[in-house]
Amino acid sequence: MDRKITLFVSNKNVLTWLSALCMIGSAVARILIVGTKGADVWSQIVLPVFACVLFALMVLETGKEFFYKTAIPVWLIAIYFFFVFEAVDFQYMDTMITILYAITLIFVAAMYTQITSEKTNFMWLLIPVLMIPIGAIAYLHRSALLAMEYGGLLTGALSYDFLGNYKAMLPDALMTLGLLLIIFAAKPHPVGQWHPTWGDRSDGRRIRTEPPLNQIVPYIMVNRNESDNKFETAFEITNVERYIRQKRKEGLVSFGLIHVLLAAYCHSVAKYPKMNRFISGQKIFSHGTDLQFCMTVKKDMTTDSPETVIKVHLTPTDTAEEVYRKINEQVEIVKNTPLDSTLDNTAAAFTLIPGVFLKFTVWILKTLDYFGLLPRFLLEVSPFHGSVFFTSMGSLGIPPIYHHLYDFGNVPVFTSFGCKRRSLEVQEDGSIVQRKYLDCKFTLDERIVDGFYYAAFFKYYKRLMLHPEVLDTPPEQVLRDID
View 1: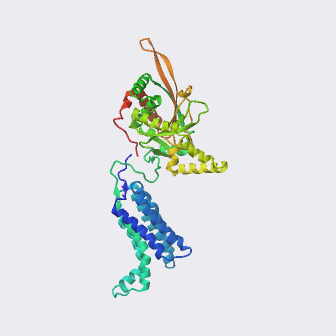
View 2: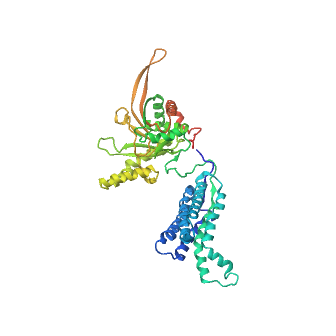
View 3: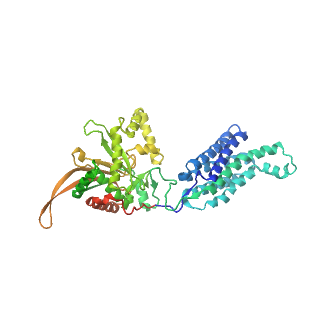
């Protein structure tokens, strides 16, 4: 799971602030000094000013986790250098020189992107690379440099033309200096930590080391409902009921089957971390150690009582008591708020949109979700995004059902459990024993792992349900998914 190197910049570093100040200074100087008018305003003022301000904001606000995104303004700066170079010397350049210059700028931006996106820790390689834009600045403003060498600096007399050319060079010089300073400000994160890079989502990291066939399958089986497998099992709960009674005596008054099932699921994910994967945009992602549990709850057990969905963030190290506490906190919030949950309020806001436009809005949301651009607050309230969805049919007095998976969102596992049932079983010695079982049905996205992995997971899950006392302590080892 862990990459060898992860670069970041800290807003507590003086060099980071100096880099940002150089970028802001470049933007201000360009607005005050450059007198371009007409069509060139967009390419020679708006574009570089926007790139400089964006770069400064990124290194100060998101440099700790998203330093790699500074490649966006760097690409904009490369585009600016192409436009300004072409505008200044178009009449002297043939097509081949223009192409070579464009390739050079692409190389500079690509090298920056490559190095800052955790592919290598050789940040110093950017120093000779930045000599290319420095050379471009020197060439573009060669009149000012020639004036400095042969003009009035030695004689003490500065001409108006020299001052004008020198000022024109200032914005580009500050911009390049800002890029140079950030090279020395960048540091590697401690080894063993994972941080996002291009292609990752805000709710998960992309799995890049799967075999080629596994990466192709999501493009063949596109929808979640056409890629699901159904699995049915029964948990023997004699020990579980004893465990629940003990927990209630200890003060966990509403402790029940759902808490045991969830705690056992968390412990199983600690051993089989691939179960916390999901498919989005035809690519495989992992939630890592963030196990997002979704469940439908009703305010009251009546047919006309409204229902809503809670989302609880669990971890593979959570004990049964921690699971109980986290779930109850969310349930109490739903029961005690007059306007239900944030999900209900968000849904109510969407109902205000006329039908035709609502359909278009949903299409926009699906498109954003496909590319991993859905805002985090929508991912948080969405019941369609998570690790596993549980629904209790036992509370309704009916057997479990096979619930479909949602094509919108990314929930890969849907679990339904029903009423407890008794079963008479004949033992090897001929005696008859009555046992209690809990029937569960699972709908699983087969694209996240293979059948062997699913089988191993459920065998271990079933073993934990036979020995629920294990859930009182965190797992001794939490395995991490591959990267």
